[in-house]
Image (cartoon, rainbow, N blue to C red; front, side, top):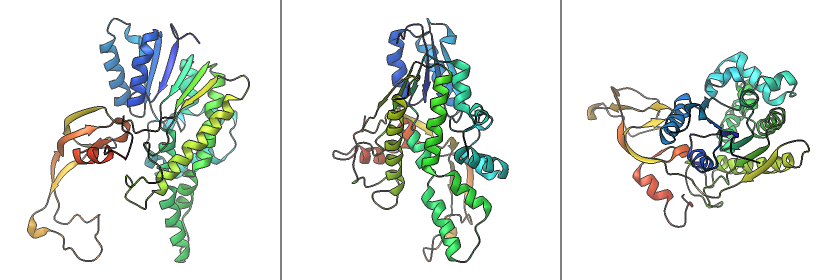
Length: 333
């Protein structure tokens, strides 16, 4: 296809992969680039930087869009916990995942709305879909229900619905269905997916990252979802009357955005500094209660330090970065 003068939608355009692709893409002079991210500040920050870098181009060349592409348009700015905590939304989320994909259900989805609004010529998908699905951690939710049954308790409808909403394969299948219909209805010519191997280039010997058994079952689930997605994209590519579909699957950890100093942020929230006087310290006996707050003094100021921003993989301290980049471990780019 002809990139010059075209409209390109970059899903996950704020991230490391997305931002690098946009830099390469601009050599071909597209007319408009839609830059998306989960959070508003991320999408707007990415567009602001691009407008400064390409100051000779019209400001409308770069368009920000933000929100969760895996849920309804009306929910795109809500966190997953906000969805699951509301009984009505939770039931609707289960229906959206397990129910039949009707025309009305399709049109409610944020991804469909996004593609129909901008009708891009090509979509470059840099969202780590496998992470978004697998890190919902069905194992913890499932074991909590299993223990409740073993102990003679009756699981609540909320607990059961949370488990149903976390099922990996139904979520992936529904995402591919929505993606396929959205691409066709928007008359997209090409779809490029930047996938993942799930382990940063390592094998089943990956020794860390989730503080559980080795290898982590959550991490292996991520790899399994990524593999299942690849085959579904393969089938989508063989479907008539659709776009050209391609996937690139790097087997490496792409993790370098910047080195900085300032407040440490976790999942969009600044971590607050706390203190505790020695005489009020917790005793090292019995089972440690992580929720205990007796004697903890909240200082009302953020925790600040030197950090390495690895983009989608979060904030690393120096020792953490040294560990993952040790020779023989992850292939760090």
